[in-house]
Amino acid sequence: MRPPPVAFPAAAFLSPHKRIKQNGVAATVKDIARAIGARVLGDDVKVERVGSVTNASENDLVFADNEKNLAQALHSRAAAIVAGTFAASAKTSKTLLIVPHPKLAFARAAAVLSRGQTREHGVNSAAVVSPSALIADLVTVDPWTFIGDSAVIGRTTWIGAGCVIGHNVAIGEACMIYPRVTIYPGTRVGNRVIVHAGAVLGSDGFGYVRDPETGRHEKFPQVGKLEIGDDVEIGANATIDRGALEITRVGRGTKIDNLVHIGHNCLIGEDVVIAAQAGFSGSITIENNVVIGGQVGVGERARIQEGVMLGGQAGVLPKKILRGRGVPFWGTPAKPLGEYLKSLAVLARLAKHDKTSGEQ
Image (cartoon, rainbow, N blue to C red; front, side, top):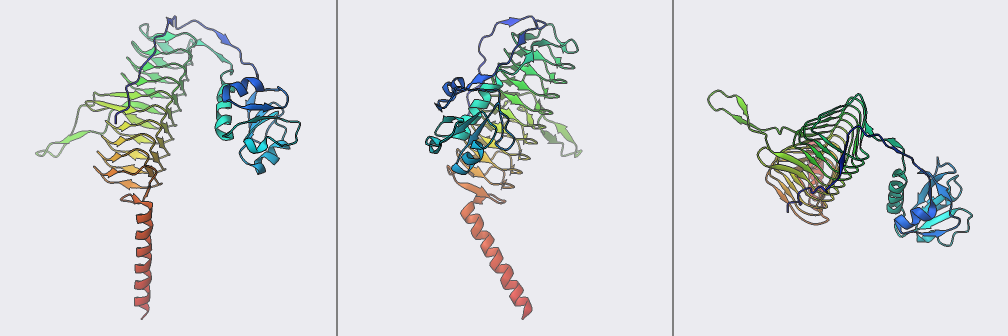
């Protein structure tokens, strides 16, 4: 199933050289509790940032997802603790935020606190911005960045130092584009997308046609598009190719680790998780909610159906279809974990038999 195309909300675009100062402030526990749906036990203290239990300061918010961690958190310097319902009866002077899922709530609290971080808005004088580019209100463009003709940058987005944003690129609102990211012409990036340093989006796919007479490989046209959905995160030095004649698409909420490569015409669904050093050939379909471990390799035109889990270093053969929501696959060629373990057991018995035969 193809994810829906990226949609961009209308925005009022202002002069790219307008500079606005945004001041960050600490948040009260009650403000955070409203945002994450927590019940507050204790005083309405202020917190400035999230931290770990072992290194927390008196202005930090920490979390405890079990009773052992709660005991450590209660003895820390933290101002407040996000904890599960097991902490509701704890006798302490510290402020507690009680929630069903403390780790998830803590992550959401961190997002609330990060909204108040200070950043100087506007286009740095050392950046090069085409006169035809549209830069929305409250955008930050750092030094030595290039933004090409007719590019569109949405409200409150940050473009880090040394980025190259090609012509006709569209980047949505509240994105974070870290330094030295390269986004090729025509790429579309949704809202609240995070792209880490060194990533390359929209480069040519690895497509060639061999001339049978000369043996030479001639380049096949790479003129398609790349679309990145809302709330996607792309790791450092990841590379995603545009389509050859059609489109490469990454669906909403997908998280891609460092050093991942996605080839041309791949369709990646929503809420997919891809760990580091995974590689995808062309024209692969990854459906929603798939989990892919580190160093997984997937051959061209394979299909990974919804909810499948691929273990680290698994290999999927070209045109193969893997199905089974929640089923873990392992090995090369990838098999359901139960089958893979049986195969290992058979190989172990054969090796033992050969060793025994050799000793006779």
